[in-house]
Image (cartoon, rainbow, N blue to C red; front, top):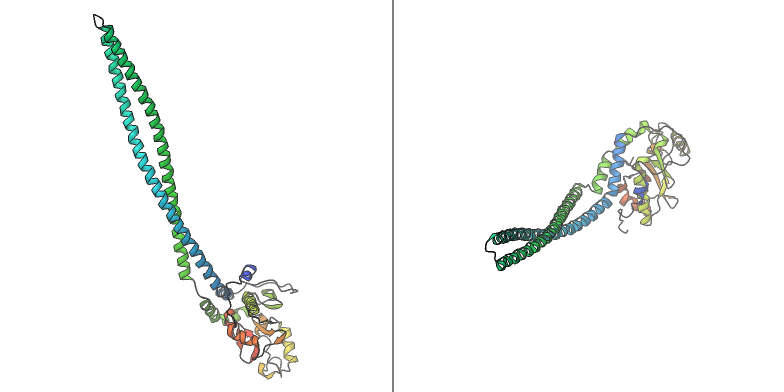
Length: 351
Protein backbone atom coordinates (compact mmCIF):
# COMPACT_ATOMS: atom_id res chain seq x y z
CA UNK A 1 0.00 0.00 0.00
CA UNK A 2 1.47 3.32 -0.96
CA UNK A 3 2.41 5.78 1.74
CA UNK A 4 -0.17 8.47 2.29
CA UNK A 5 0.71 12.11 2.80
CA UNK A 6 -2.00 13.67 4.90
CA UNK A 7 -0.38 17.08 4.57
CA UNK A 8 -1.36 17.26 0.90
CA UNK A 9 -5.08 16.94 1.50
CA UNK A 10 -5.83 20.06 3.52
CA UNK A 11 -8.66 21.24 1.32
CA UNK A 12 -11.00 19.56 3.75
CA UNK A 13 -9.55 21.50 6.63
CA UNK A 14 -10.42 24.76 4.93
CA UNK A 15 -13.93 23.58 4.11
CA UNK A 16 -14.81 22.19 7.54
CA UNK A 17 -14.80 23.45 11.09
CA UNK A 18 -13.72 21.44 14.06
CA UNK A 19 -17.31 20.54 14.78
CA UNK A 20 -18.47 19.20 11.43
CA UNK A 21 -18.99 19.62 7.73
CA UNK A 22 -22.53 20.35 6.57
CA UNK A 23 -25.94 20.00 8.24
CA UNK A 24 -27.57 16.64 7.64
CA UNK A 25 -29.81 16.89 4.60
CA UNK A 26 -33.48 16.63 5.51
CA UNK A 27 -32.81 16.50 9.25
CA UNK A 28 -35.74 17.57 11.41
CA UNK A 29 -35.37 20.91 13.15
CA UNK A 30 -34.25 20.38 16.73
CA UNK A 31 -32.78 22.47 19.50
CA UNK A 32 -29.05 21.89 19.69
CA UNK A 33 -27.68 21.26 23.18
CA UNK A 34 -24.35 22.70 24.22
CA UNK A 35 -21.54 20.43 23.07
CA UNK A 36 -19.80 18.90 26.12
CA UNK A 37 -16.32 20.24 26.77
CA UNK A 38 -14.74 16.81 26.54
CA UNK A 39 -16.27 16.35 23.08
CA UNK A 40 -14.79 19.66 21.98
CA UNK A 41 -11.43 18.60 23.36
CA UNK A 42 -11.67 15.29 21.49
CA UNK A 43 -12.55 17.07 18.25
CA UNK A 44 -9.70 19.53 18.70
CA UNK A 45 -7.19 16.77 19.43
CA UNK A 46 -8.23 14.79 16.36
CA UNK A 47 -8.04 17.90 14.21
CA UNK A 48 -4.52 18.56 15.50
CA UNK A 49 -3.59 14.95 14.94
CA UNK A 50 -4.80 14.94 11.35
CA UNK A 51 -3.18 18.28 10.53
CA UNK A 52 0.00 17.85 12.60
CA UNK A 53 2.15 16.76 9.65
CA UNK A 54 0.88 19.58 7.44
CA UNK A 55 1.25 22.07 10.29
CA UNK A 56 4.84 20.97 10.89
CA UNK A 57 5.62 21.11 7.17
CA UNK A 58 4.22 24.62 7.01
CA UNK A 59 6.20 25.69 10.08
CA UNK A 60 9.42 24.29 8.62
CA UNK A 61 8.75 26.00 5.28
CA UNK A 62 8.06 29.25 7.13
CA UNK A 63 11.29 28.86 9.09
CA UNK A 64 13.30 28.35 5.90
CA UNK A 65 11.75 31.49 4.38
CA UNK A 66 12.36 33.49 7.57
CA UNK A 67 15.98 32.35 7.81
CA UNK A 68 16.57 33.28 4.16
CA UNK A 69 14.91 36.64 4.80
CA UNK A 70 17.06 37.15 7.89
CA UNK A 71 20.20 36.45 5.85
CA UNK A 72 19.16 39.04 3.27
CA UNK A 73 18.28 41.59 5.94
CA UNK A 74 21.59 41.01 7.71
CA UNK A 75 23.45 41.63 4.44
CA UNK A 76 21.34 44.72 3.81
CA UNK A 77 22.05 46.02 7.32
CA UNK A 78 25.78 45.43 6.78
CA UNK A 79 25.77 47.35 3.51
CA UNK A 80 23.75 50.13 5.10
CA UNK A 81 26.24 50.36 7.94
CA UNK A 82 29.16 50.61 5.50
CA UNK A 83 27.34 53.33 3.57
CA UNK A 84 26.63 55.16 6.81
CA UNK A 85 30.26 54.89 7.94
CA UNK A 86 31.38 56.29 4.58
CA UNK A 87 28.84 59.13 4.81
CA UNK A 88 29.92 59.97 8.34
CA UNK A 89 33.55 59.99 7.26
CA UNK A 90 32.75 62.30 4.38
CA UNK A 91 30.70 64.52 6.70
CA UNK A 92 33.67 64.83 9.02
CA UNK A 93 35.90 65.77 6.09
CA UNK A 94 33.41 68.30 4.71
CA UNK A 95 32.84 69.76 8.18
CA UNK A 96 36.58 70.21 8.66
CA UNK A 97 36.82 71.77 5.18
CA UNK A 98 33.97 74.16 5.96
CA UNK A 99 35.70 75.21 9.17
CA UNK A 100 38.99 75.78 7.31
CA UNK A 101 37.28 77.90 4.64
CA UNK A 102 35.52 79.88 7.35
CA UNK A 103 38.85 80.58 9.07
CA UNK A 104 40.36 81.64 5.74
CA UNK A 105 37.46 84.02 5.19
CA UNK A 106 38.03 85.58 8.59
CA UNK A 107 41.71 85.94 7.73
CA UNK A 108 40.81 87.58 4.41
CA UNK A 109 38.42 89.95 6.16
CA UNK A 110 41.18 90.95 8.61
CA UNK A 111 43.57 91.46 5.72
CA UNK A 112 41.02 93.66 3.92
CA UNK A 113 40.46 95.66 7.10
CA UNK A 114 44.23 96.13 7.45
CA UNK A 115 44.49 97.21 3.80
CA UNK A 116 41.71 99.76 4.25
CA UNK A 117 43.34 101.13 7.40
CA UNK A 118 46.65 101.38 5.58
CA UNK A 119 44.99 103.31 2.74
CA UNK A 120 43.38 105.68 5.23
CA UNK A 121 46.72 106.35 6.94
CA UNK A 122 48.47 106.90 3.64
CA UNK A 123 45.76 109.34 2.54
CA UNK A 124 46.31 111.43 5.72
CA UNK A 125 50.08 111.67 5.35
CA UNK A 126 51.72 114.86 4.18
CA UNK A 127 53.29 115.45 1.83
CA UNK A 128 50.84 113.32 -0.11
CA UNK A 129 52.38 110.40 -2.04
CA UNK A 130 50.20 109.44 -4.95
CA UNK A 131 52.29 106.35 -5.66
CA UNK A 132 51.92 105.13 -2.08
CA UNK A 133 48.18 105.80 -2.15
CA UNK A 134 47.89 103.91 -5.44
CA UNK A 135 49.72 100.94 -3.94
CA UNK A 136 47.43 101.05 -0.88
CA UNK A 137 44.36 101.10 -3.12
CA UNK A 138 45.67 98.16 -5.09
CA UNK A 139 46.19 96.30 -1.82
CA UNK A 140 42.58 97.02 -0.82
CA UNK A 141 41.34 95.82 -4.19
CA UNK A 142 43.40 92.64 -3.95
CA UNK A 143 42.21 91.99 -0.37
CA UNK A 144 38.62 92.59 -1.45
CA UNK A 145 39.00 90.06 -4.30
CA UNK A 146 40.41 87.47 -1.90
CA UNK A 147 37.66 88.22 0.64
CA UNK A 148 34.93 87.82 -2.02
CA UNK A 149 36.46 84.61 -3.38
CA UNK A 150 36.56 83.14 0.09
CA UNK A 151 32.96 84.20 0.73
CA UNK A 152 32.00 82.34 -2.44
CA UNK A 153 34.01 79.31 -1.36
CA UNK A 154 32.40 79.40 2.08
CA UNK A 155 28.96 79.42 0.45
CA UNK A 156 29.98 76.40 -1.60
CA UNK A 157 31.38 74.68 1.49
CA UNK A 158 28.12 75.36 3.36
CA UNK A 159 26.14 73.80 0.50
CA UNK A 160 28.45 70.75 0.56
CA UNK A 161 28.05 70.52 4.34
CA UNK A 162 24.24 70.58 4.14
CA UNK A 163 24.35 67.86 1.48
CA UNK A 164 26.76 65.74 3.51
CA UNK A 165 24.58 66.09 6.61
CA UNK A 166 21.52 65.07 4.62
CA UNK A 167 23.26 61.98 3.24
CA UNK A 168 24.63 61.09 6.66
CA UNK A 169 21.19 61.47 8.21
CA UNK A 170 19.57 59.36 5.50
CA UNK A 171 22.15 56.57 5.80
CA UNK A 172 21.79 56.59 9.58
CA UNK A 173 18.02 56.18 9.23
CA UNK A 174 18.59 53.37 6.73
CA UNK A 175 20.84 51.59 9.21
CA UNK A 176 18.30 51.98 12.01
CA UNK A 177 15.48 50.65 9.81
CA UNK A 178 17.61 47.78 8.48
CA UNK A 179 18.68 46.73 11.97
CA UNK A 180 15.08 46.96 13.21
CA UNK A 181 13.89 44.78 10.31
CA UNK A 182 16.63 42.24 11.01
CA UNK A 183 15.69 42.24 14.69
CA UNK A 184 12.01 41.64 13.87
CA UNK A 185 12.96 38.79 11.56
CA UNK A 186 15.25 37.33 14.22
CA UNK A 187 12.36 37.35 16.70
CA UNK A 188 10.10 35.75 14.09
CA UNK A 189 12.68 33.00 13.49
CA UNK A 190 12.93 32.35 17.22
CA UNK A 191 9.14 32.25 17.55
CA UNK A 192 8.83 29.73 14.71
CA UNK A 193 11.63 27.61 16.16
CA UNK A 194 9.82 27.59 19.52
CA UNK A 195 6.57 26.59 17.82
CA UNK A 196 8.34 23.73 16.07
CA UNK A 197 9.90 22.58 19.34
CA UNK A 198 6.54 22.72 21.13
CA UNK A 199 4.47 21.16 18.34
CA UNK A 200 2.88 17.82 19.17
CA UNK A 201 2.92 14.76 16.95
CA UNK A 202 0.01 13.20 15.11
CA UNK A 203 0.35 10.02 17.15
CA UNK A 204 0.53 11.98 20.41
CA UNK A 205 -2.65 13.93 19.72
CA UNK A 206 -4.45 10.77 18.56
CA UNK A 207 -3.43 8.98 21.75
CA UNK A 208 -4.78 11.85 23.87
CA UNK A 209 -8.06 11.74 21.94
CA UNK A 210 -8.35 7.97 22.40
CA UNK A 211 -7.77 8.36 26.14
CA UNK A 212 -10.90 10.51 26.52
CA UNK A 213 -13.11 8.75 23.95
CA UNK A 214 -15.20 6.91 26.56
CA UNK A 215 -15.77 10.16 28.44
CA UNK A 216 -16.97 11.67 25.15
CA UNK A 217 -19.58 8.91 24.83
CA UNK A 218 -20.69 9.34 28.46
CA UNK A 219 -21.12 13.10 28.17
CA UNK A 220 -22.55 13.25 24.65
CA UNK A 221 -25.27 10.60 25.14
CA UNK A 222 -27.44 12.52 27.70
CA UNK A 223 -27.50 15.74 25.66
CA UNK A 224 -27.40 14.43 22.10
CA UNK A 225 -29.84 15.79 19.50
CA UNK A 226 -30.13 15.18 15.77
CA UNK A 227 -28.89 18.73 15.25
CA UNK A 228 -25.50 17.56 16.52
CA UNK A 229 -24.94 15.47 13.37
CA UNK A 230 -23.43 16.19 9.97
CA UNK A 231 -23.57 14.38 6.65
CA UNK A 232 -20.22 13.34 5.20
CA UNK A 233 -20.54 11.96 1.68
CA UNK A 234 -23.96 10.62 2.63
CA UNK A 235 -22.91 9.09 5.95
CA UNK A 236 -24.36 10.87 8.97
CA UNK A 237 -22.05 11.17 11.97
CA UNK A 238 -21.65 13.35 15.05
CA UNK A 239 -20.16 16.71 14.20
CA UNK A 240 -17.23 16.08 16.51
CA UNK A 241 -16.01 13.17 14.37
CA UNK A 242 -17.09 14.53 10.99
CA UNK A 243 -13.72 16.05 10.13
CA UNK A 244 -11.82 12.88 11.00
CA UNK A 245 -14.30 10.65 9.16
CA UNK A 246 -14.09 12.78 6.02
CA UNK A 247 -10.28 12.72 6.11
CA UNK A 248 -10.39 8.94 6.52
CA UNK A 249 -12.68 8.52 3.51
CA UNK A 250 -10.54 10.92 1.44
CA UNK A 251 -7.26 9.23 2.37
CA UNK A 252 -8.68 5.75 1.76
CA UNK A 253 -9.89 6.87 -1.68
CA UNK A 254 -6.38 8.14 -2.42
CA UNK A 255 -5.16 4.64 -1.64
CA UNK A 256 -7.76 3.09 -3.96
CA UNK A 257 -10.19 2.08 -1.20
CA UNK A 258 -13.81 3.28 -1.38
CA UNK A 259 -15.36 3.73 2.07
CA UNK A 260 -18.91 4.56 3.03
CA UNK A 261 -21.42 3.19 5.51
CA UNK A 262 -24.26 3.70 7.91
CA UNK A 263 -23.61 6.09 10.75
CA UNK A 264 -26.27 7.73 12.89
CA UNK A 265 -29.62 6.06 13.38
CA UNK A 266 -32.46 6.88 15.71
CA UNK A 267 -33.45 4.87 18.75
CA UNK A 268 -36.62 3.92 16.89
CA UNK A 269 -34.55 2.49 14.05
CA UNK A 270 -32.43 0.60 16.58
CA UNK A 271 -35.59 -0.97 18.01
CA UNK A 272 -36.72 -1.86 14.49
CA UNK A 273 -33.37 -3.49 13.70
CA UNK A 274 -33.51 -5.51 16.91
CA UNK A 275 -36.83 -6.91 15.76
CA UNK A 276 -35.67 -7.50 12.18
CA UNK A 277 -32.51 -9.24 13.39
CA UNK A 278 -34.50 -11.64 15.56
CA UNK A 279 -33.24 -10.60 18.97
CA UNK A 280 -35.02 -12.71 21.65
CA UNK A 281 -36.00 -9.53 23.50
CA UNK A 282 -35.71 -5.98 22.19
CA UNK A 283 -34.72 -4.48 25.53
CA UNK A 284 -32.77 -7.12 27.41
CA UNK A 285 -31.24 -9.72 25.09
CA UNK A 286 -27.49 -9.24 24.48
CA UNK A 287 -26.40 -8.13 21.05
CA UNK A 288 -24.75 -11.49 20.40
CA UNK A 289 -28.12 -13.26 20.72
CA UNK A 290 -29.43 -11.60 17.54
CA UNK A 291 -28.98 -13.13 14.07
CA UNK A 292 -26.92 -10.04 13.27
CA UNK A 293 -25.33 -8.54 16.41
CA UNK A 294 -27.43 -5.50 17.32
CA UNK A 295 -26.99 -3.39 20.45
CA UNK A 296 -29.79 -2.84 22.95
CA UNK A 297 -31.62 0.44 22.23
CA UNK A 298 -30.07 3.31 24.18
CA UNK A 299 -26.64 1.68 24.18
CA UNK A 300 -25.66 1.83 20.52
CA UNK A 301 -23.05 4.41 19.54
CA UNK A 302 -24.93 4.71 16.25
CA UNK A 303 -27.66 6.52 18.19
CA UNK A 304 -25.28 9.39 18.96
CA UNK A 305 -23.41 9.33 15.65
CA UNK A 306 -20.14 8.02 17.08
CA UNK A 307 -20.10 4.70 15.21
CA UNK A 308 -20.21 3.68 11.54
CA UNK A 309 -21.03 0.34 9.94
CA UNK A 310 -18.45 0.63 7.19
CA UNK A 311 -19.08 -0.56 3.65
CA UNK A 312 -16.84 -0.60 0.60
CA UNK A 313 -18.22 -0.61 -2.90
CA UNK A 314 -21.70 -1.12 -1.46
CA UNK A 315 -20.66 -4.26 0.43
CA UNK A 316 -20.38 -4.78 4.17
CA UNK A 317 -16.79 -5.16 5.33
CA UNK A 318 -15.47 -8.64 5.96
CA UNK A 319 -12.15 -9.54 7.52
CA UNK A 320 -10.88 -10.74 4.15
CA UNK A 321 -11.70 -7.49 2.32
CA UNK A 322 -9.08 -4.98 1.25
CA UNK A 323 -11.08 -2.24 2.92
CA UNK A 324 -10.90 -4.08 6.28
CA UNK A 325 -7.15 -4.45 5.88
CA UNK A 326 -6.86 -0.74 5.17
CA UNK A 327 -9.05 0.14 8.16
CA UNK A 328 -7.06 -2.15 10.42
CA UNK A 329 -3.84 -0.41 9.37
CA UNK A 330 -5.07 3.18 9.45
CA UNK A 331 -8.45 3.73 11.14
CA UNK A 332 -6.91 4.48 14.55
CA UNK A 333 -5.22 7.50 13.00
CA UNK A 334 -8.70 8.96 12.52
CA UNK A 335 -10.02 7.88 15.92
CA UNK A 336 -11.96 4.79 14.77
CA UNK A 337 -11.59 1.41 16.50
CA UNK A 338 -13.07 -1.92 15.38
CA UNK A 339 -15.51 -4.00 17.43
CA UNK A 340 -13.77 -7.41 17.23
CA UNK A 341 -17.00 -9.35 16.78
CA UNK A 342 -18.14 -7.20 13.82
CA UNK A 343 -15.65 -6.48 11.02
CA UNK A 344 -17.86 -3.68 9.73
CA UNK A 345 -18.48 -1.84 13.01
CA UNK A 346 -16.08 1.02 13.82
CA UNK A 347 -16.51 3.60 16.56
CA UNK A 348 -14.43 6.01 18.65
CA UNK A 349 -14.22 3.49 21.52
CA UNK A 350 -14.42 0.17 19.70
CA UNK A 351 -17.77 -0.45 21.39
